[in-house]
Image (cartoon, rainbow, N blue to C red; front, side, top):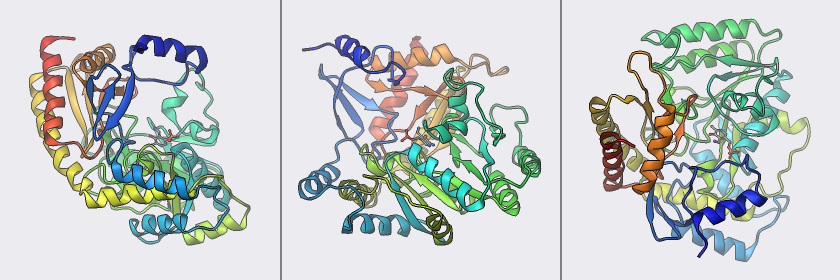
Length: 427
Ligand code: PMP
């Protein structure tokens, strides 16, 4: 059979190299099952990074729903069929009032792109404030508000004048870390808002910063930012593409942990468990205003198959108590990772909550110099030991802890034990 190296050589010949893949020498993955992946040599890996396969890889109920619907009807979304309506009803049931109107697309980039179009169209403004260190998609408009991608050579230096960066109050690392960070940073946002002639169209942010490495935003910051943006006539968008669907354990949506309700919510990734699904939810009034200003059509956004898959994912999340599992296993992981931090000086901080955590690696606990090369080497070593890991954050030094929500306690322990082994033995 073809080796992993041969597959990469074939891939490099026909697929653009800029399309990222994990690892310098990635295993050749053949199938997934729950929170595990199997390669062609029969080696099993624990998948610690997959926030797409939220209910687990190859879930039989999701697979059955997809194949049943695919054999019955799949078409572009301009036809009238029950699936899209049922799916929208299920989504709206999960959101607080007044978020009651859904738009269907196929990915996170499309969802945030559409959200930007909606907020700019209904406010008649373009200026957008986003949180430093965020990522919201690859499309032209979402790339502009993604600072991580803007640090990429392909788009460096291209942030347009209508995009404003709100500081990210990272309590571990940053200019003004400390107990009053939320208030200080909110003051900074108030002055950004005040300096935008005509006012901002919107503030767009994740409620827990995924691309910074699962970094929590301190309580009090988002409520103040939402208030100042709204006072200036702007709208607020919560990008739930990574945090939504119960991943943080405590709430179904990330914004709920801040006690706020946004005007627009964007969701994708977990929604389809790997099938391309994205959606935007807003208030009827905003949706009506946008609808009166032009047309919108996504060929297969909310298609019969996407809707069937989307409903099946929500059913499994509920029936298998996966949000509760995220809380339970997340708490267990926090305790065990904190204990590991006390024994290994390379671990600077455990970020996040639930099944959305980050293990930040630093060379020096005083200077917080990022342990970037170490993180890459540790991921490679963990792979050899059967754990799929990947580093993220501004310095690629934060190990992601974002497994499927069906992960068991034994598997969580397996991850921590392997990490302990690598940190103790060297990498
Ligand atoms: N928003 C956030 C918060 C994301 O993490 C991502 C993807 N990493 C996106 C949007 C874009 O989603 P997609 O890759 O599905 O286009």
